[in-house]
Image (cartoon, rainbow, N blue to C red; front, side):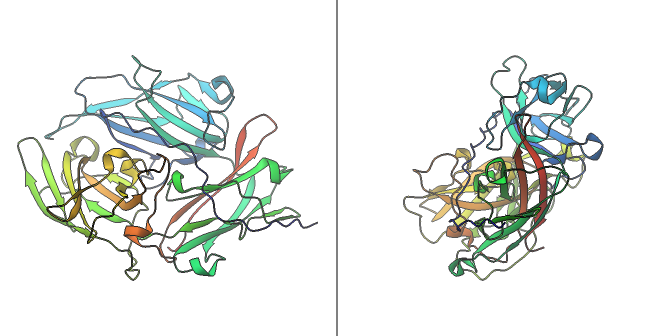
Length: 413
């Protein structure tokens, strides 16, 4: 029997935003081991993948940082499970390695660990929050990140194409997909199954909770069910790797007694420009320099952005968004309009490396977790290459939201 549902407009999932990192924690890198550009998603089997966590402590004091993880439901709310039900070993693990910076103007201690390890591992799939803890104040994490552990219990076929709405076909992308039951019983999919689609690891833009279009045999069809996304534009980049030569996009490089300063070329709005294509790393960031070991030899530099919008955006705020802002609009990455220069400007300290970013516009009245819009300054194109992650959650009979399927692909590689 075929069950149909009416098409409903695209609605965002409204997952809770992550808190900003404490100032002493900088450049938190979190990805599968050996895959620095990939989002933190791994299979349940430890033999098939580990996660790597790295960050710098700029406080000048040594802290024996610890890591813990919290199992969540499909909506990123901590689940009702006790840690003993999803963790094996201890409930926390110390950072395995720490090393002082070398040859840098800014002193820091670099910390790293891989998970799961002998001290801490997980036994269930699902959404997880990784928390960095100060053992002297463990009740308040100093940094929080999302990651997902999945199982291959169903098959997912997915692609991005043109939206059903003709008016959106040049500016938006719609994700069409089907979930196929294979070996694991997906009974009552309308109530127990939920698919979530995330563009470029921006959970503030994720779409979730749509009903399937129909169920027929072992296929659960989600084609043309409203997973429609602003296509956006190719990410801009900041190349901060070299201190001896000006990289593309750097207007000038200045040295002071305690810092280097990178003045980037003034960016311009791309709202109505023809799509120019180009490669990017889907908003990610990489630590690197041209001379020394990347993690302890890369210095912290001041980065100076400027954006020419031709006129101020009255009643709206402009944010810089990328992996270095936790892929969300953070207050300390909100730009200020400099009337004397006629530009939006921002300066912020970043570690040497390569960064992707977008300019995002928000209404000041919007809640902290609202994603804003890309169109106002970046434009929006159906041909943009976005990295989509699709998670299939199922309310397992054991009392938790199990991730039974996963797919990840580029929309226009």
